[in-house]
Image 1 (cartoon, helix red, strand yellow):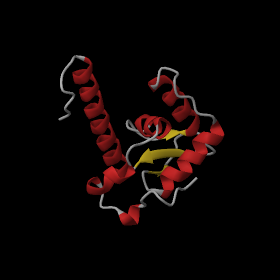
Image 2: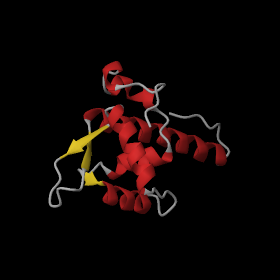
Image 3: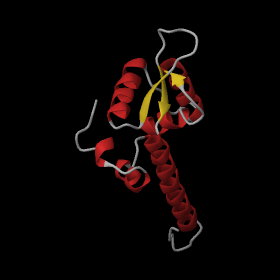
Image 4: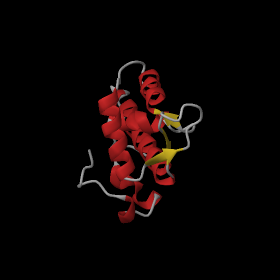
Length: 127
């Protein structure tokens, strides 16, 4: 479902505003990661999410299509031409969607760096 507190495409200027979408939920991050290598249909997205998360994130059809609707509203993904079965809808990342993935993975890398440093007895300062 669309969240009115989240920015929409017309409110953003790509990478500069990609950070406004952060932090992503694990579900949304994994959906976007599943689309990094090209267009996918819903069933393939569900399977890729499960595989990418080592089974920790599982998405059913209703949850997936609710997320897809929200991601389309935010212009992070868009419909793509589907090869083969015309009944299957395929989706791909938009340029903004790719920028959001890049911003989130950078944010998460900072979190991991901080945690490793703090766990090793360091000051825990991030980059």
